[in-house]
Image (cartoon, rainbow, N blue to C red; front, side, top):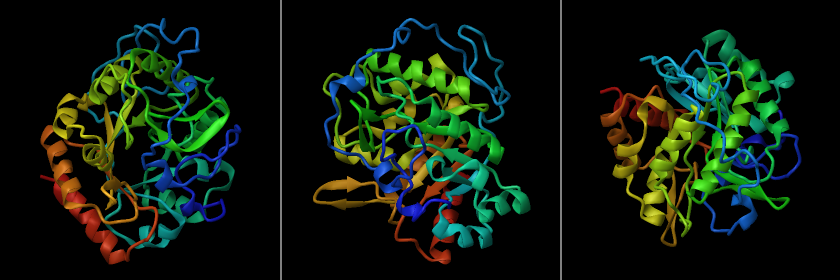
Length: 345
């Protein structure tokens, strides 16, 4: 990667400026108990609640679909058929290059810059025609403050440079009141928060050139004012913006362990026709709290949840995230093989 110690910094933006900043993936995908300011969830954008609904994006869509316009339905996966992938990290680049069981990779957008892409990453595109998908962690789409469009432009530019079939971020907020949490923070699942998120997603979609996907996050708390379940919140988000979804099964497991959510109800309520792909990762329990570390092997229970997902849909892609304590090639290949065996029924 082009930033110092990139894999130790691959997940949540650490500054509030417009430039894309390196961040820690372990932080970005772990939940936090810090209480955000109420300002982060107050609908301050004038048109947030009044914009009409947008029809869903199809695989051929290259920009946000105008409000009220119907989209053609297709049986082709919305983000394309991907297969089994892995999160690209500098520490893993040699392993990925020589590993036969990798069909595609995902990169942390904030750690790369389009004019200076690593040669090992470009070689995957050039020599193996491997899709490379940028995944952002700093857009703060659920925040009430104006969207930092420079960050979205960076994501769009990277997507163009990599010829990516889609780009993505998370259903969360990162910044509030001029402060950066360093984590992906959960949104209160209220109509007001949904209006803010929808407005920001629509703006982001107007900037990027390809379909836009959003991922569910792990959290250590549930907001008391929640009006919708997570699956209802995500479903309405897709209906109003046409965005795609990345379903992180490890985050689903973490939330079941830490806040008592029902994974079966979540899986039953998701609009699977909007699925872009699936995330898988390992974690560990410490002091009664399950941490989505991305530094441990995928638990059998998380593989079981992936199997439950597979009973409901055929995921276009499944990605393994590993951000620290990197295993041997043999161990990594075994994890990828387990993912493939679970979804290839």
